Each structure stands twice: as C-alpha cells, then as structure tokens.
Image (tube, rainbow, N blue to C red; front, side):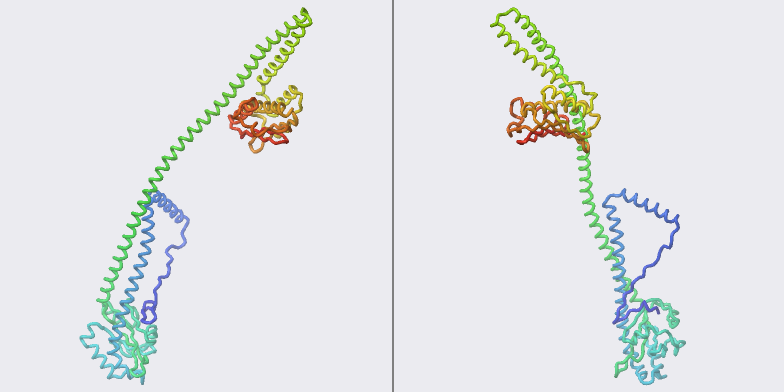
Length: 495
C-alpha cells in the first residue's frame, strides 16, 4: 500500500499535487505556430465587447479557483469520511481482536487455540457481511494471522505497521496492489483497509497491529453523493457570481459605450469648430494683410495728392509773391514777407507730410537695410542721431511685416524726437528662437502714466493706438516701458 495515500487519526497529512511538466522543449516551427495561434486568439478577443471579455477572463480565473476549491473540499470530505469510518471500525474490531492477542505480550506469538478462535470469529455471519479479511501483524512486519493462510508467518514492508505501532489508526481507500493483498484483490470488491493498534489490557502498550478489510460499497456511495453535492454547490455559486458580475460589467460597459459615443460626437464637433476657426483665422490673416496693403496704397495716394495738389499751389503762391515784391511799397513788402513766410512754412510741412506718407520701395530690402533706411531718413529730417543695435535678423520677411515695422520705427522715432528732443535714440532688433524683437528707445524724461492711455484723444494717443493696432493686426505683441530715464516702445513677432 502506498505511503502517501494513508490517512492518520492524530497526524493528518495534506496531499499536495506536484507540478507536472506538460510541454517539453519546442521546436521553432511549434513556437511560430503557437505565436500565430495566440495572435489569432488575441485578434478575435479584441472584437468582443468588454463585458464578454470580462466574463471569459472571469470564467477562466473563477472557474479554476472554484475547481481547486471543490477538489480540495471533496478530498477533505472523503478523507474525513474514510477516517471516521476507519476509526469506528477500528474500535469495533479492537473489541473482537484484542482478547486473542494478549498472549503476545509474553511470547510475541499466537497460539493454535487463538488462531482457531479467530477463524471461528471470521465465520460469524454478522461480521463477515462487512469484514472480508483480517491480518494480525507483529512489530517486525510478520503476519501472525491472516484469513489468507498463504501469507502467514511472512514478512512484508512495515510502513503502515510502524504508524499503527505509534497508536494511530491508518486507513486507505485506494487500489490494493501490494503482495500481501492477493487474496483481497481476487474478491473484486470495493474495500478499504484499516490498521488498528492492539493493546495489552494491563499496560495499554501496543503489542500487535490488527489489519482488516471492510466493504466500501456504502461508504463510496456516500462519498460520491457528498462529492456531487459539493460540486453542485460550487458550480451554482460560480455560475451565480459570473452572472452577477456579467450584468454589473455589462451595465458599466453600456455606460462606457454611451460616453464614448458622446465623446466621439463632441470630438467631431470640436474638430469641425477647429477647422472653422482655422479657416476664419486664415481669412482674418488674409484680410489683415490686404488691409495693410490697401492702407499703404491709401497713404501713398494721400502723399502724392498733397505733393501734387497743395504743395504745387503753395509753390505757385510763392512765385507770384516774388513777382509782387518788385512792384510794391515798403509797407506792402512787409505784409508780403509775412505771407511769404507762412506759405514757406506751409509748403515745408506739406512736403514733410508727403514724404512721411509715401514709403520708399522696401520690397527688395532686407530687414537690416530697411531699419538702416528709416534711421537715415529720420536723421536727415530732424538732424538728430539714431544708434542701431542689430543682431542676426532673417534675410526674407513678408511685405506686410516690412511695412508694419517701417511704420512702427518711423512713428516711435517721431515720438522720441517730439517728446525727448531726439536724445539717446536707439533702434534695437534681434531674432532668437523664431521670435523677432524690435524696440525703439530714448533717454528723455519719460511719459506720464496717463499719457500712455490709448483711449484718450490727442495726437500722441492716436499715434500709440495706431502702433498697437498695426502690431496686433499681424499677431504681434506691443508694449511700452517708460521711466524717468527714458521710454522704450517694443514689438514682438513670432515668425
């Protein structure tokens, strides 16, 4: 009888299944086949809904868990039932066998009278309906008595005998495949064997081991019935949990699907709005550039009209005044000189306005050349000094940006000349990390806080507001820094 299959009354043994190696080293083709198989399974799984995927995974995990739980419970129930039946049978047989082995406490053997008494005992109908065979063992593994007389006085392995000699009841419900069980196997009946310690009446010392084989028909039926009930309970609980989890996950999956649909609708709406906003931005940029171009054309036309209209008329007035001076008296000459001076001043201002409104041809100039040109013109017109501090600037720039920068620097220098007498005029420009920074500074007394408010009227406010609108129309940033040490007008563009 196998040692790992016995159940002890005092020292319980838990049966653990050792892991088996199911798959040996696989060839490359097998690995590729498994990889393709797993890929196909994964692809099919991704097509299923989340609730179905969850139920499949939960069924595998929960099913395996409940299988092992059911297996463990049924095994423990079977062991407990067999052990309980064995202990009851052991106490029953001890009452029959112990009187016949008391003599073994003296000479460690059985007399012929005791053997005959045991034979008559086995012929009892009330006993042999349940007990089909009996053996009495000596401590060294020798069979002193057996229903099968062929094995009497033979020695066999003593694994179960050793445990029984310790006072434990040992039982087994497995197949009887040892040499000592030839007779029992021929009976072709479901049996379980029980090893019971037989004690001396006086000292209670174990002096022999009684082994008997009891029919296991009713016990097996009861074990199978209990096992079936255990699996029904486990299966029902597993199915109930899977069903409950399925409905919970399915409800959550529906909520997620509804949210996904709503999110997709919102995403499409946002995409449509973003496309519309981008189109509007492109239209605004195009309109701004077109407005800048039309504005420059308008300014050039106004400058040309001033040059060709009022300037020519004032020139004609001055010529006619020169003719009148030769034929007038001294008193009239004084009045004519006054008129001549006013006309000369008006002509100069008209020409200055005409030159300021009409820009030079800057389309073919680089940003550096453009800034040098506007500084040079300002110096010629005002007789002041302008310092250029220019970093590395891009060679090419769109025409609207060039026009905007020319007007920005021109107006800022005019303000510096008008309010700071042209002191410390500096044009600073640099291009770093795709950002163009341009500032025009002076070292005048600075501007009052209310002077920088663009909402108020006046030429200064209109000039600053025009600068801000020009810069921001092209997506730039406009700012003014003013203190008692000077004023700085700044523009920044992201190219």
